[in-house]
Image (tube, rainbow over all chains, first blue to last red):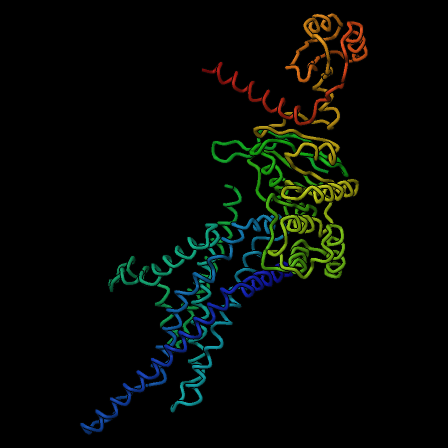
Length: 262
Length: 322
């Protein structure tokens, strides 16, 4: 536990004394705020049009949950931002230790791989929370000011989804960072892997064969959809948690094998 | 304290460490000497538990490096070739982090921190960022890091590299003071360093041990005789024949004269010195003797001799195979 905490604190320290963390947080806040505003404006305009049309033609207003639409749009923006920003968060985490030779200190200390990897992962998760939690301000605005207000549970489930998605992406990025000692290479490969995970269901089509269903299942965004609707389904939970586990496990294997090779 | 048996490390086809066996007693300072790429760093990395060997066994502080790596790592302080530092951390924060992951008792972290800082001459540098320190101070932080958990065994890879002469002397003093309580293995290719700090030397070349002995024995053993350097005034035409009359004189050579003084080199063999006989001969023949001194063979020469002998042998073997 102590080793884990020491590792996590060290990584947090390094993240937050470098400008990277602040640039990431700043860009994340600015873009998520901007897109929230755009979505809000669009949804309001759309609703107004609907109301006008209904009045003009004397028909009833079609049922439309405006606040749910805003939240869905906002959560999908969050996922897109994470896709772009997570590679930058994870690129240096192990690659830089290798490049600076500090990995020699870590691997010759009485520290298990589990403590090392979990410590690093936890530091990244803290950074993710620092990015995600303040954006709740936007959704709370909606919660307090819109009529009817979106149920709080829906918002929380959506955030849980964003958090799990972020965790899965971080675990993947951590693994890629363990493969190289070049940060840029790590970032580019991570980004490439994310894109594949993103669009993998497009190649699957709509078939019902085993392959296309497997490919659809592997698409990391498919599982996010239900969360943004406020639906909490255990199969998606299991998907993300096993994804995180796999990422961390592969990182450990990679550390082991680079030990044997070097 | 350290037992190494038939240690071998291969990278693909390349053998970095080849069937190495040696022992280090408690409190001893052992020097690893060898040209770059000889396998010094690889051996040290194996002993510190950074990576496993391909074959063989290493026991450090009573624990097998491969079977109980955590126990070994608790008892070993390791300074890699490039000190493993985080530039963005202050010296204090860094040493505190290392103390934590090395498992220093929580209550003792503060006192250990102060002790190693004083020991390594870092008393004033605590709050400074590591990246702002000079190379010499960075190296000291590296050594402090290896000492923080008061390990039984210290493995130092080129501890004096990049330091200025005064700092080198300080680090050597530090290492000498560590001997006795700590077992130290250090690698270097600076030869005087070995004769100054180490009780025993292992010379490595191409991953194999070429020689193991004390620095004094190594220099003595290979010499087996003396080299005398004379400076003689007058005509030295007959000097070669004259001096070769002396028993035990192996060869005499005369150099280019400078200001009417000719340098003469006399190689002798055997355990007894013939310096006085040489001097008598020169003076008896009416020549002027300006200087006579023995050139003791330095560790440098031993080193070059041993490592090139090895290569020459290998070339012969390769030639035979063809």
